[in-house]
Length: 260
Ligand SMILES: NC(=O)c1ccc[n+]([C@@H]2O[C@H](COP(=O)([O-])OP(=O)(O)OC[C@H]3O[C@@H](n4cnc5c(N)ncnc54)[C@H](OP(=O)(O)O)[C@@H]3O)[C@@H](O)[C@H]2O)c1
Image (cartoon, rainbow, N blue to C red; front, side):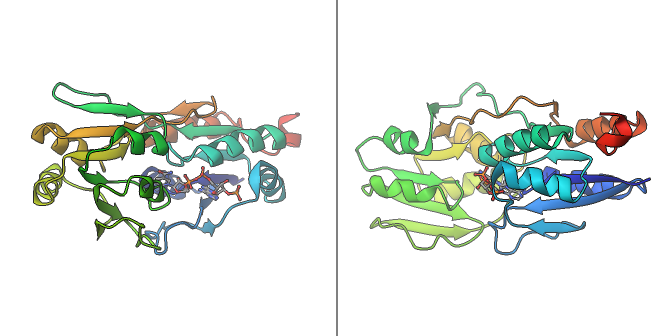
């Protein structure tokens, strides 16, 4: 009997987990993406692109496609889909497990200013003109139009369109991972004196944080959103082990078969 698993993705870990699970004969897998990135990296497994229409839409999808396990492997700042996933799993009576990548902790020499939101990160830059590196998604950078006095270096996977209504901005297109040495070179080349970042955790985008520390550059760190409290693991390996435990323990299966 094959078990139907739905992975909510959009992260490297989701792709890695899908790769691991796809090797199993007892699993039938679907990975989903929001559809934000124009040319997403090939996922290597059956992939569905686009939203479900809120928690109710996701719950209906879980029922219709007879999903037996929902895996939330979305980005730590994708709070809406994680909330929807927890609610939909409850509504449809489907077990859920999540990948909760730990955040970065400040280390000796870091100069972090914590901000509660993108809007408060804008305020944290203060009034005097500065040279700011925005390593944020293209949806978030528009908020910085509220502080047009700064010079911005904006890096994104897809072009920021429309361009920001600020007089002084440079745009870079790049997809991680980014090495610390390259990030240092970038900060020096553009005379950056403050980096605005999310606390994404993981290795792929830590280079800019380490580079800022090495150069004594301030980081305005946007705090993580609150995520629903569901069974979770911190790494792909630990999450794969959780899924394995559920499969081996015959804990998955249509509700009727479990006697629910
Ligand atoms: N936020 C970040 O910093 C960040 C960074 C890297 C990657 N990502 C990835 O980019 C995607 C969008 O992030 P976001 O912050 O815009 O999300 P969000 O605000 O939490 O979600 C907004 C809506 O997008 C749809 N959606 C999000 N993730 C989806 C998925 N994996 N599959 C199908 N639908 C999805 C859902 O639409 P419906 O309500 O219609 O179902 C959701 O309500 C996520 O998959 C996330 O893993 C986000």
